[in-house]
Image (cartoon, rainbow, N blue to C red; front, side):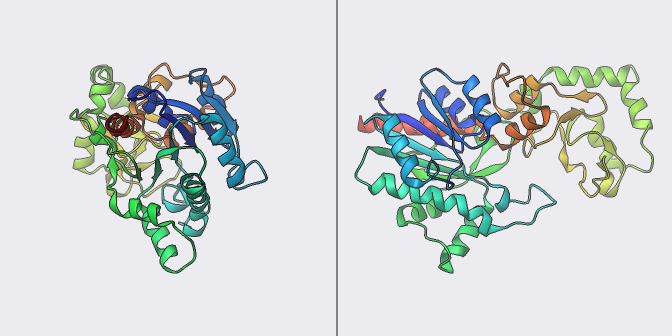
Length: 347
């Protein structure tokens, strides 16, 4: 593949796309996000040739389509490039139970990104080789509904990609998450992995810790603190060795529910070590009745290297949010391996 094909990443967060791209041999030359802490984190873990900017897209002169397009063209300096964007997905999803889905809010940044793509693809400047967009699956139905009603414009080439390209499941790329995402675009066909990993494969020492907690009575002592009745299926589930999201468990509906009076979430949010998880959420992860996972363990479960760093002034809560928001590096690696295959054919 020609070394001239480079990556520009928008809404980059802590850098999941960039980590995957580097593993696939694709250089990121420009990374932009609006969150200062995420920009600083991404920059700390990036090679020196990556330019980092903090810009709030769609706001002010610096966030206009024209200004961002000029910045991109200036940075790629005539080289063919791949443009990736991961616009905010919260308004399209129900990940936050306290918020209602709002397609109109979710569409604002998507439409801005579509306008930028239209400008770069047909503006007659530079060489947009390929592009990709990552979103939660409900975004597709929300955007299409608004498009059908004439409330937003989706350029034909983007609409075609959105309709034709399949969802990508993280587990198909060797990650322990089995959540799926829209990952549509042009110029690539993602390379999936034959590897199927479990939580135990990534963090094999957790099983020994769980067994030790049972042997020394730690597990039973913590279990005894719970009041009420666990359903037999819940007890069997927990005794196999588990990690859970959002803290430790107490009895509740459907066998178990969460602390902090967050009732109604069943033990389907607690995962056996010999299985996979639905996602890495924006909360601490704990080994049931033993301890919270470390930063290094949390990063490995999400697909990042264990030596990934955070600035000292970034809070633990913000670190969890960044990891939960990040594009899975394993999926990004598969996408950019597919891009390399496509570029090798042409170059």
